[in-house]
Length: 105
Ligand code: FES
Image 1 (cartoon, protein in one colour):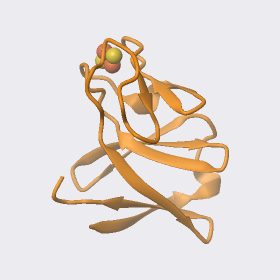
Image 2: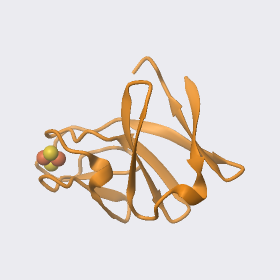
Image 3: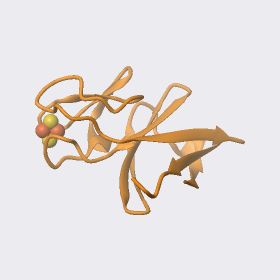
Image 4: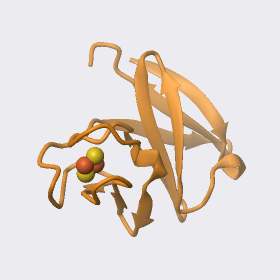
């Protein structure tokens, strides 16, 4: 497991995604109110960036065909996606956002 410093809280757009790449992982990060989430950026249905999707409460809608994914659990909640995307651990310390990556996954 590796904990990576991402950015200060103030640098995160509200209710929108931020695409980052860490150790070969393409990750979509989201700030919703005071909460931060990180899921796999690549939609499980086809090639699309979930960081470019629209956020609705606790879900992000894929910008290509509209499947919704849970921000907390990565589950595909609507078709056409049927498989989940990975979920990453996020924490905030001293107003800085950190991500924990499992290099085995
Ligand atoms: S590429 Fe995301 S729903 Fe099709």
